[in-house]
Image (cartoon, helix red, strand yellow):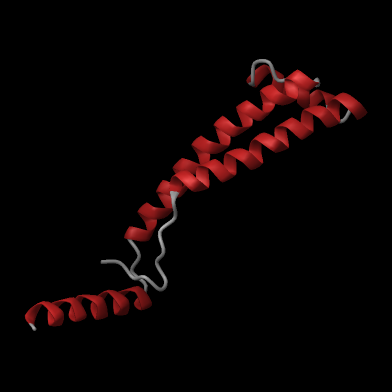
Length: 112
């Protein structure tokens, strides 16, 4: 059993969805800003070569939303998984005390 007070696990899927939404909306707004105000057109050209269909237009903004969500979701999923993996290796004093107390309480409850 892990420590409930200091070693809370992260939902990798929820983190992936939230990062995907933020990334997708950012890319969509970036495309629309480039379309309306000629903002960072060179960068849009470079991103368009990486993400097919991503361009400074309304349609390109929605394509950017999809690409941004996909990339953000995958990165968030990996990031959350790595966070939880590192959490399993937690060796801080507080977590050891919590784990020892939980184990002792469980053993005492079973013995009674």
